[in-house]
Image (cartoon, rainbow, N blue to C red):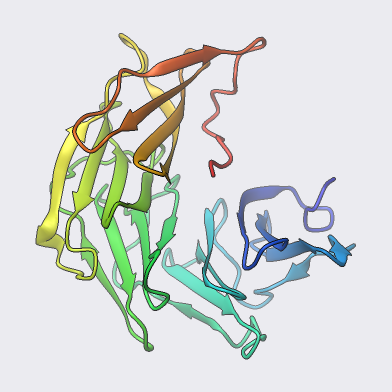
Length: 273
């Protein structure tokens, strides 16, 4: 079923589940409208998606990220026309999306093509971490630790990030992990051992992931924590789906699957959960 916003094509999509049986989907129309539709045990989507930002549009081609850090709490992130990250949020005691909107970065611009990766702590509902790549191809780390203030740091040890491959974040085994695409086609694994601290000097470049093949570049990547394993799944320029697992010591040799017809190589790997 097409859940999209009226006649407009959508430029980005995201989804989050705020409680069992509930799914909230978010998208951005070509006019910059951020919309939502939802499904739950008593509602099977809505006929007309609800627009959340009629007076503050997203920039053309903005990415969007969505998370639920606590039961019945939703936080979304996208880039506005000033090239800042904007957040909007919803909860049962604060249901007005239009009142709950604010830019959370200032003084620099995010690169065209960058994704946004938002992750929630498995143990702390008052923690949000959001990542993107700016115009100077630096990875930016935006942090919320409760209260009204957001802070921002540059992630060290990762020069020449590729906005088209992006930055992908998740919590795993008590640490915060990133996989960042490099402009040389590399996939770089960084970890932050101080999970409850915003100190950028605690980032370390753990490993570069194995290449998906000689002379073959990745074109899309997703990262997820699955039990004891940290898993990267991606699409390669030769049309293959590939994956590799981190066991705490090393990344495995990539596995591959070639579909018939080939998997998309347009960088639109939708989701991994």
